[in-house]
Image (tube, rainbow, N blue to C red; front, side):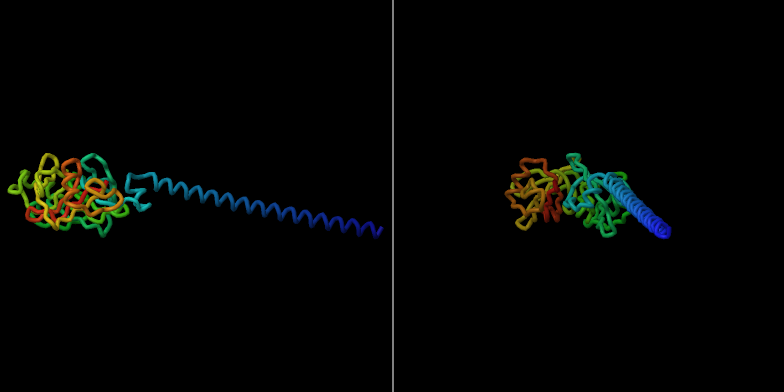
Length: 254
């Protein structure tokens, strides 16, 4: 009888240990599954957040995050949202971009300043926003989706419209379509207004695929490249002119 009682006690103890181990294992699995479930939920939330960030914008939204939107654009600047704008070129191609505290904003009558002034005037973000809601012509230099500078086009301010250098302003930044007039003499046209200018041996000519080079990098071009491109027509440029002579000719980034 004593041996039987001990045997029953041993069996009961073994059963208790087995039950305890089984319960512990089940609880471990439950905790593990719970952790996996929580992790999946966090991943889903992160993915959803990325989707919301990435799916809300045009050009500059995704490009500024990937660092691919860099270049110079010439066209009409318009307002999208606080700190966010677009520039549309003569071919109606539109590029979005952001501004920052470091963005250099210079006006020539529409953003701020005086259309008759020889030098552009520094403007505020508030002035930029107000002008962009109406639209104005400018050259926008963008790096990683953010505007480094926004320089209002003098020609867009309503100054003279003649086709010779004797009419209108002889100094300023003018943007539009490049045209050929004669050796060493060119024009930039926009909205029916034409501005003539000359080149010199020290005129800096920068191409971005049409005058010379490619769309990936800004390339120094020769006068022969400029003349050939101007004769073909349809190339958007920004020209910095002093006393009728081009200091720089920047092809719009394509």
